[in-house]
Image (cartoon, rainbow, N blue to C red; front, side, top):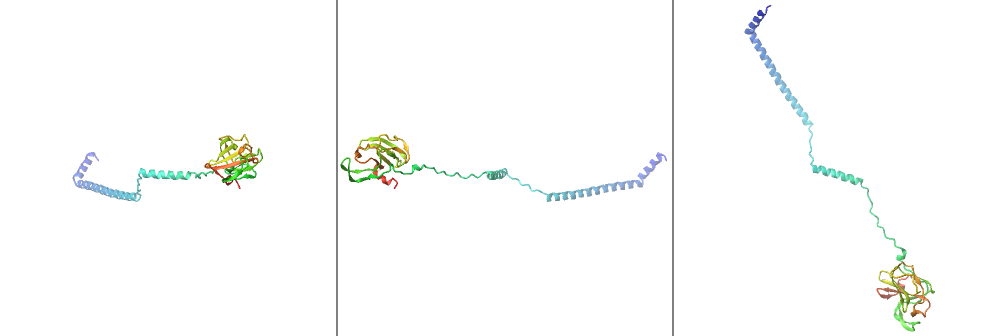
Length: 238
């Protein structure tokens, strides 16, 4: 068959019933395309709604924490951790000072019988001076050279040579009282300013007190409170 005859037949087909057939086919193709697009859009819309529903179900709420609140929380955590790691230290125990026993005791300066007692109210006959007078102390009989000890702790206030009572050592106890040791040997064992404890040696029994030389060898021991004479027996051990 020749190409001329084929072309004529195609031309005749298109000018005759073939034109309407082609037109119908085009309309059909357009309709199918429109339906496909519409169906596709509806399917996409359904899919979008389904995805949104899933996302709604999986929505995570975001809580915004202010920096200040976060800092407080972190600080509290650090403080708590620090408190847990702190080693508990017991408060220091107050240490009471340990005093030397000699600081609080009172001892007799010498051991012996009492020849004369303290009496500043009544006059008594003095065998040495051969008159009547009071006696501001006690006389303790003891051998010549017998050791004399400090009755109480204190500071040596003075060491003097008295015209009547001979070698005299006075010790200040810091509480208003002073002890007076008279008729000592000429060379005492302490000097002014020395600190002595009760029982420390301060000298020896002598015979230097001219006003009591008519008695037996003894220590003349007196006590003063705020400058006034007091009974030494009130301070010595019973």
